[in-house]
Length: 214
Image (cartoon, rainbow, N blue to C red; front, side, top):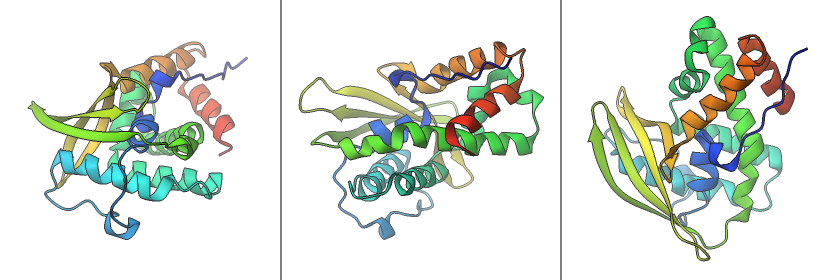
């Protein structure tokens, strides 16, 4: 019997929790969606995070949006700002080596839709929070952008975006919230599901399909 139950804690909002509930519900947008749809060549890692947050605010916080439309916009943001093939391999751990590149691509789409299903609607709850981008630091081939999610009724939340240059633009490959890597948290959860099903990645895929209806 395949065990397909997947549960994700708030802290396990890897990817898109990062681009979503944490970063998106933050900066008041000053540009129209049409002006922030492309990542400029040579744009700094910091400016990519700022642009992403502006775009999320412009596109996702409208409370009149239908849920499926909001989820589709959420997935589009992930396509634009996250290196989903890298993220997918990381959250699958060693198991990504047992599946084909086509299966990795299919898994990436499932993962995006699963996270959108769980987190896109949190944008409706935006109420005065601010997203403040700080400095960036370099470590080997990755750039880390420091930021804070500032809440009116609680202490700020520290968020660090791990970014890598792909061709001519920065993409997000992980996010740490208060020192906790969302990628590692998600990997641990997915690994548990796979291991409970005799190391069958297909069991995880089936569970994600059941959740998303894809």
